[in-house]
Figure 1 (tube, rainbow, N blue to C red):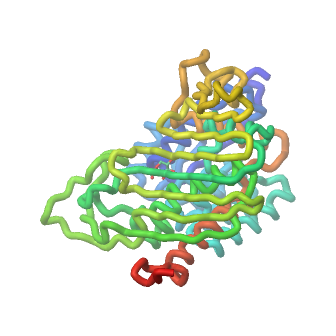
Figure 2: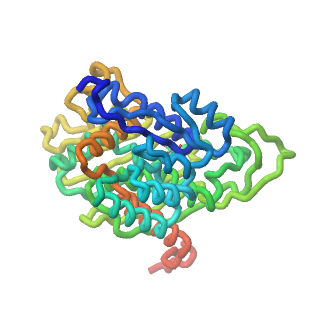
Figure 3: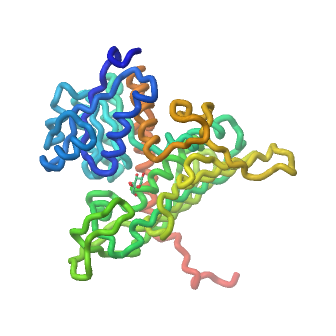
Length: 401
Ligand code: SOE
């Protein structure tokens, strides 16, 4: 349908930091590369600081601004609310938006607690019955290589899944002088590496395998327990403008988490998430081992998927590196010729594509708030396990038997 005849989807976004920038790019780009039933319009951007939100709106291409998200939700020229704010605000904004008849895209993790996530999922279920839909922004599942991994598992190329191995390794908090931000404040962020990046690994592992985590055993650690206050990050990997005289505040979340997991279909898993793995920048990795083959992915080489096929002739067996840039691969055919590759921002664009296509066909987008509630339950189980080391066995207590 010609662009000028495609019905609009008028978007209001709350928040305009790193995720706000990625989402803005996606709202601008999706219908320029994919045929969509609705044409997104960047109608309003909400933020508390008037000067800052106006500057951001100009830079990111939003038509108007609000200094209160409630005003955004009351507007009758807004069809969908996109929540790009810290986790402690997700529940209030999403519930109000859904009850006002607005579709919702909510950044991950869904909430800071299971109780909040349960309420959000319940309200979303009621809204869906009225044709108002909600999606949670686990965008990594829309990286072409991970979408291909799921397709291959669904097609039985791995056989019976036995192992899941997930790591999400960053290093932007390796420096103990990196400043204290909202991500290190449990009240605002809910948790540290666990909810910020471990949540991505949990969703990706459940998405690719099609199975859910039923139990965990965990260890969490905070290496730097206080940080300079008032410094500003220069990007995620940057260092705050602080010195030895800057006052310090407490870090109330984890720097790192490791946990073992059991999936409902039988596999066992090992997970690791850290923001203190010096040298690893955004190494979101997933390996799945099955009875017939294995897959391995590393976001730092996001255009490739490693595949070991035990059906190969014995002399030919080995991990093959699939370059996920063929038209046959998920999403890629709408971009560049084979071999040209995609980037981090494309996952957000694909997220908008799938969301808008679902809304246009009157179907519920995924991951739903119920899917995101399952991730929230895993996050809570990890925190509970780590805080109750009843099964922890110090080596000095082991007997010689
Ligand atoms: C920080 O760790 C962060 O920005 C996460 O919050 C994002 O979800 C991830 O995509 C990149 O790293």
